[in-house]
Amino acid sequence: MNELKEALRNIEQNYKLFLQQQFTFIGALQRTREDARDMIRPVASISQVQSYMDHHCNNSTDRRILNMFLNICNDLSKLCHKLETLHSGNNITNGILERCKLLLSHSNNLSTIRAKYPHDVVNHLSCDEAKNHYGGVVSLIPIVLDCMKEWVTRTEKLPQHLLYEASGGSAISEKRAAQDAPARAAISQKPPSMHLEAQISTSNKDNVQVQGSKHVQKKNINDTENHSGKRKGPWKPPGRHA
Image 1 (cartoon, rainbow, N blue to C red):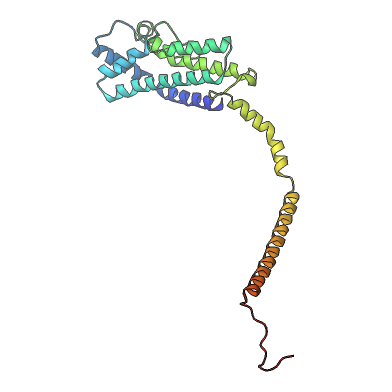
Image 2 (cartoon, rainbow, N blue to C red; image 1 turned 135 degrees about the horizontal axis):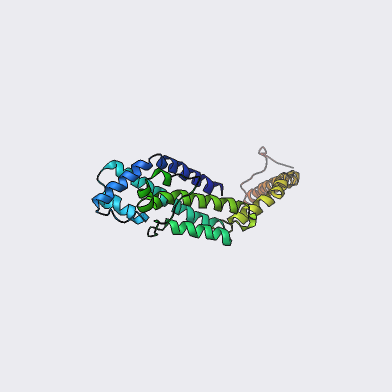
């Protein structure tokens, strides 16, 4: 959840930069509409803005601001899908996400939506622009941002066991791991005296076995030499012996 909230804040920051350039955005739409000879119908969908940028944009400033709008819409769409994977949903939160997905659909008609107070994006347009051309397209991003904030607020009030990760069960595994951590810590802190004694005992047995095997090996060598005659008795001077 924290990661998604951070992503939402980043999108908001980008939108604030875009909002400072609203007049540049409207100017870019005006010029591309003129180039497309499409001055009658309103700018009513994301795909329409995409088409203007791809086929009727003749300068880098217009391309930059139109691309900025499209990138923010794309980021919102990706975040919307991430929100779906975080929470199993109830009727209210699912309804909010469905509205976001509908608004961000490239073919959705935006001409009738209007951002209301405290947003003033529509107020910065002339009456003709707001009513007949750009009122919907400038209202899209603030409305979707408000919906996503509402989704986060409502979701945080729901029981935590309803939250889950897209990978499936990882949240439950993490919870169990946290619960088992004290037991694992207690086991790891037990004194290793029993293990040490067992190791010493085993080492002593090994030493006895090694010494015994050396003694047996030496005895076998002596017996072998005596039997083969290679080992002679002490030297005696020649002559008669008692």
